[in-house]
Length: 415
Image 1: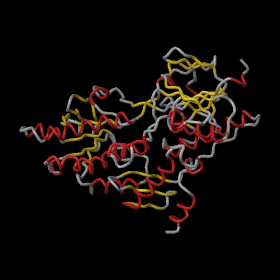
Image 2 (image 1 turned 45 degrees about the vertical axis):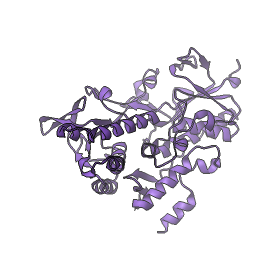
Image 3 (image 1 turned 120 degrees about the vertical axis):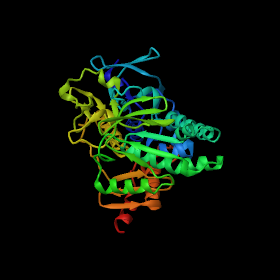
Image 4 (image 1 turned 60 degrees about the horizontal axis):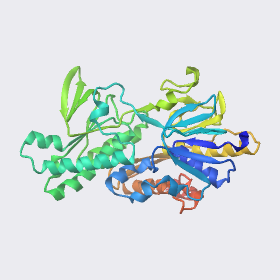
């Protein structure tokens, strides 16, 4: 088969993969293109908390790939990727199918990393997918209902306690959401908000490591102001997780913490498929992520582009939605350039700010690291930003693919 007619394969349907596909469609990219993911639906991860709480419509946050790619010219294949052969330019799938590609896009993201903590994988809830959110929500409602019917004070306290392991952005956003949400679920059952506990357990000395001090202070204040004030256990190491129990090490002492709901939000590990690629250590970082050129290509395999959580650039960028979708746009642009005989160009990734959910109808928006907008207005800005990113084909694509409209930022900057 002529290399010009070989398909472009996009592995992974997260932000980088999906937006690569959508941009290629918008550019009328000629080579056949196939997006492969093991799930039927895309999950809009920045709004996973709204998915859990029901604040936003399910169909907007968890749309099917075949719906998103309808009439796009990009084919969708639901299958599990079994192996990637970079030398032979082949991708093997669990179904037995295999494809030889002309160009390849690696957008596989990461997986939950448990770092050898005994029982962590088996006894905690992850919070990365739509299925995770549904499982957690169902479990929490069950715990609340059982708490209203038990006569055992200790059992009731355990049922009404949520332990969130990890104080990064995901852990803090989830804790703040649950601290407002759980009373809404529990009080109609005859319970009281004061009976509920939401506790964040963090090995380090501070929450939101790597973020700005102002953002950290805003988050700490917001956690105290929730309907159920969020408790922080800092400088506390999780050594094991058993059913309804977290084993902790604090001040050189071993303790046990009881909670019927234990959520793991700490750390991301490299996708096993990325780990198996024949890429030398010199072209990986300490976590095993792939080092990419400024054009988002693999140094030894220029026909392979990569972005998202499985990669790192020379100037490392945060693993956020705004970075991932901009990488998708850059990859699509360079694929189009190569198809037209032009050279790829360096990706231009702009960071316009940080958006964090800090409770129901409460968020903080840090814009250009200069302006901080909190509370309900921050919530509206965050919602507007992410709604503009929702990849629905009914919306104008130019609007869909932008972080925030320049006009919105212009007016905020004048405040």
